[in-house]
Image (cartoon, rainbow, N blue to C red; front, side, top):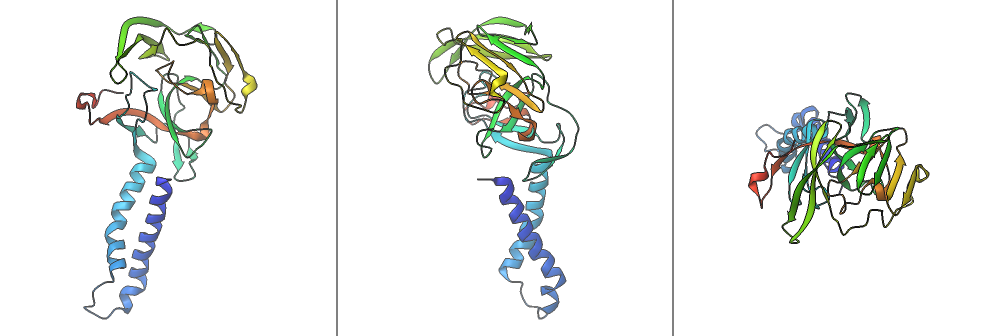
Length: 262
């Protein structure tokens, strides 16, 4: 469901009814006559819908993390807030940028419309910027020929699956964050879609090398061996970006996670 479109339709309908009542219907009602229910409801809900629409379209938008692809940074069940204006002001519904502010940087965690099916929102970490040469060979990330600094940090216990992954701290674009690797998982990508600019990538049993095309970004999940990301379905166009994730505001199963993400 396109919630932004639904909000916009409700805003237009309730706003239109409220305006029509002010300009026409009110003048033609007999004094003391009660407003029709559809006018009363429209006038009551219009300001609420307007506030929600403006906040959600231009300031912040809530999202729920649906999978473990961003472990250990974000867990399935985390409810996060996404900054909608940090990368520029976009027109709601059509998502067209009208004001540039900042560009995504390496290390940012962003929400974006899935290139294969834009009706779905995904969340991953920005690894490669336009023009970057991204390599992931032997489970080691390099950008433009420079290995990304990484520190071993023991093991991570997956509570739901009762298994361990190797835990590392990676510093990408000045952002130090945790990533996971599984020893038993293959180094290379087992399945790759035919995506736009597919010829910019070379895959083999050890990993891949991709050159990011102009106006696009290369994104990966922090749970490196359990994430469907740009390695599989390709580059993310700038037009698909929704905003930058920055805050966990709720987690029903683990309230201690609230506020733990930045």
